[in-house]
Image (cartoon, rainbow, N blue to C red; front, side, top):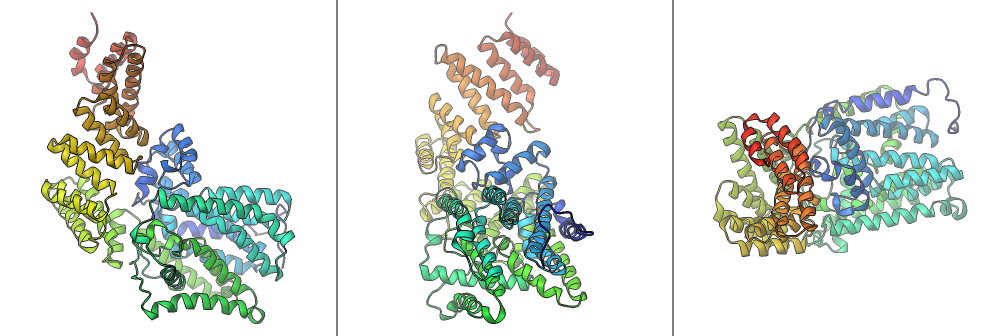
Length: 639
């Protein structure tokens, strides 16, 4: 069976299957439309300064360290959504769901190009779209990486099937966009060769390999760069990844078996799964890699009897999973060796192949199965409603996970900030404290657990215990800059400025992009009368986090104060810069901080620079906002 060429007139009713797929894809994720921001979403969206303005968009593409991960196309979509919708979470969720639906429709088109029967193509696309293992990728805004990259991956594959020069060029463009969304898509050229082998039984270097060599080169470069960033920027290195090659094989084999199990039995899915204990001295742990490797080899040797399809499906699945199987350091392996979103792309092949099997069964079987998957996905989507719901569900499935306890503590911290009654505040404060203490007890070898315990003590004003906890964090990892900075802030509050300054300077030397260390050092310098250092480090903090209004105001005040120590033109430049930062801070002010007071400071700065006309306009605006400031404004104006 062959499919019509791209661009040919569509036969009757070809719109029906894509419409069904799109409708069911959206229906299964209805609860996610109203979900909020969870876990990494604040880093990716809510507190991401790159989303605020056009220079931030430029930094997204040119400064790999300015975002949590260097996937610039993903952050470009976040930038556009922020400009249109601000921090309205349903807009971001809607985009993820629509991208997922589009990917499912494109998968249906790909299966048609692979000459799947119409029913098998429909069932394969629906199996993939409705499978609950993908909820993590769709209902979690941060995993835009998966939903966006897969769209371009499938578009690139469709263009490769044209086997024309324009198709090859378009495929390369789509492939580059996929890599700019997530580098796991680097497997595309290998997947293409697997398809060629499946359809022809052989691979020709000239006609099959040579055209995709540039794809291999680009994918390898992107993969190496991502691996470098994982080690240096994401910091996926250290004792948590100190595994031998044999250990990594044990992890990989067990992960493959685990992922296959969740595809076949998608129950009790968790946001964070328990982290296995890897022990090469245990013979039973070798059963997993032996089963994975043995199964793949068996399918290869049986290809003449059962066909090439099963081997190709298994090779695609394992090969696409490879970057997340433990052979390379990835940050989430600190707390779990597996995650549902790791098999988002890899699951295409086995679930599509399952569509072929379903098409041979009585129609009631696939209908009941797809209905059941839809219900499971609807139920799984509900746990992504908010942080407390997500982490409470995860705790039930992974009660010994230290990361789970920390994040439940943070969830109660957020609720504490919004509590409206003393009783609510008491409950959330106690739960926050208890979860931080339990995380410390579960993983006393990790600096994060001590640091979070220290913050919990500090919030209770138990400063000796907080200091002990921060010092324990540094004992566990002497380079842990967050504990270093927290300890410095205790010294700063106690008036020990030299000790605080030394800690902040060391933190910055270890992690130059740590904004809190820069702001803290600036505060010390300001108290020591070192205005130049204060200006330098407040400026660094603001550059790293332009939306932090208190740092921007501190920079403006330090610039204004330091201007008096310089003659023109440096004095004029500093006053002008101070005025600019006051002006930029006004739109960022939270509701509790009146803009009129900041306008007074802006007007005073303009007056010092000699811009009396602008100062009058600003003072008039301040008085309109707060008439009680009329006398103060009048005193500022020259006679």
